[in-house]
Image (tube, rainbow, N blue to C red; front, side):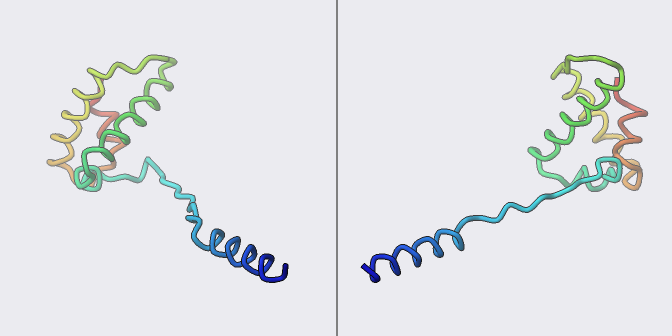
Length: 98
């Protein structure tokens, strides 16, 4: 009986150790620079673009995000950011997105 209890304890401890820890990551979207945005992989750029599109749509009380505009604006922002790598992405979007 003690052996089964010991084995159950070892298995429970192993499961607890093997469980991945979830770290909370906070990103201040207003601090992302054009240079950083340009260095992101395509998936991260898409995520940030979608988030920013949702944010700016909400500031205008719009409830729909049109993918065509997100893609077009992302291309415009990337071109703008290549010329101004130190500018924040937030400002670049404010100046260029429609």
